[in-house]
Image (cartoon, each protein chain N blue to C red):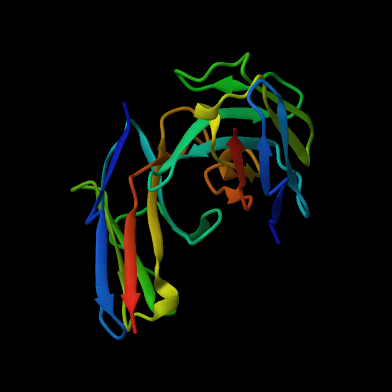
Length: 112
Length: 117
């Protein structure tokens, strides 16, 4: 059975801090790893990673995948209160396209 | 682009009634749509995958007779919770994708909060 584990489960920081969120996975025939941000409603897409070692970057957020060690990290630099959210990691694999297996999520709280 | 809507955003119903939730892809044709359920402070759990024009594929443990899914067109999928009970109260989220090798990138709707009294 596919499995995704995120750590930490929750994190409280102050504005300006840098945070690193972790995601490890076990999946048959890995295809991709995705990061989502969820505020009060449904998740919004952040990154999709398929290749090892290639950093994806969007503003203050960046992410990288290590397919050998089966994990990914999501970095957020110079955090702002608007970054407070649940960050979800999901993987796809096997023969079923589109089936996302989600981790438990990391609840990030950024205080002013 | 790739906007997905859900209706209603919130519904409160009495135990024993049926509730229908709509999921629409507004600006693209979604070959595949997915239905998820999320309990408070928990992650999303996939309930079923639906492809336009065919029967939905349900995940293990999800009762197909209780959660009826219809994907009648490339822009609309519906989830009907039949004979709802309080334990069905949850946040239901749909997602849509272009299908095929692009299916892994899913676009989520805003979710529907169901409360069964």
